[in-house]
Image (cartoon, rainbow, N blue to C red; front, top):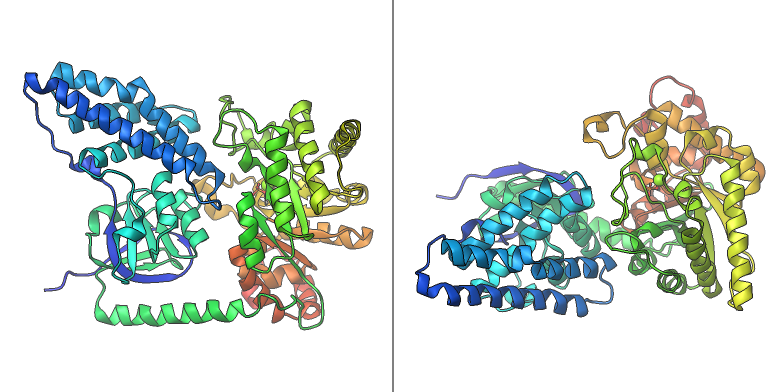
Length: 573
Ligand code: PEP
Ligand code: MG
């Protein structure tokens, strides 16, 4: 008799539908055998473990050295962290002591020590160290695989050659697994852990395949070879669905594929509304490598390069040369299209690894431009790197978290000093560079005029603007239901900023998540927005909505409802 269908609900991390066979990865740590060895076998058992640890460490280093050129930079850093963990006496020595003193077998000694270490990390108050507990789990899984006779991390596409769609099911996906999975032809991912920014979500989106994360127990409930449906639209995973449901999903899959194919047709279509208004569509990127996805989606430029990702997951700051190379690679890749580089926005939920102190209220603390102005040398290094990159194309500098005019003046002075230093050195930079500010603090959105006058452009960061307007921590799931982009106060702040841009002749764009939310495109057009920047994956969906819109009609409708007390229902527009 066929197994009954199980439905699991998680978080939709990457769009699309997949139907295929489950390939359940990992969970090796739960399955190891536990036995005591004879005292005379102690040395041999220690040697077996030491050898496996060394093979696993070499594997991580080899993987780090042979990363595909388009791999996110954080992967190399994490692979080095994994190799370092295996060199640490806590993992390289302590399990050997357990073998010698308690006569545990190698697998038992390793997992016992790993569990203790993992718990210690997990209990730490610093988020960076807490995250290391999953790294400990990943490296132990790898050593266990070596002990079990898997000699090296094999590329997944060599492991399967049947042509059948395969769906990766895993508790969590380590960076090392991520590297091998990127090159393979998996149809989808389903994991127990993870959020929208987990490694799984990142790989899946960059591969353009469906993914559902945060399923809690898919790894236990799905068995190798089960038929799975991964619904990346609703965040559902079905295990062994009936023929009827499979048929329905086949239809949805075909519909989705047809829709993506038809969207690809508008890649080069100018984004102009029915009443002839040109709308600029740009891309948000976190890593230089993503410039390629921006171009593939037809982006007219980079509207937001979150430079802080170059500074994270590492010890020490990137120096001027490293930053320059990263910025210049994006500028060159974009071939003259504008590249908006946001200066370091560190603080709040994004902390540097070497800084353990957390302010009482970090979102309101020394974040972004406040952080940079308090560290003039660090800021100057970044500004020189950005200016040097401007010699290769069109660069715009975007200042985050601006609330005061004195901050604008201080930043402009810092940019002038950076120019002067480059002049002294004889290094070139573009003569004219536009400088703009993020509008993400209500204060600037309300008192916007002097900022619009002093700067060349404005970019509305709705993610933070909503957080600070509604006093809702954007990362706190407990209050997520109150995080409302449609709140009239938020919309009025956006409208106020756009109107100031029109009055002063300065371009205004939205680069927060609202810009890529297709259900809000008509509303933003109705507010008068003519420039959007979003994740490349969302760009063509938004463009299609623009091609179907009549801006003037939308402006009349939105003006009529903007001052209502209740949120606007965007579906009525
Ligand atoms: C924003 O706040 O909307 C924004 C784009 O910046 P970040 O999400 O990086 O804070
Ligand atoms: Mg922000």
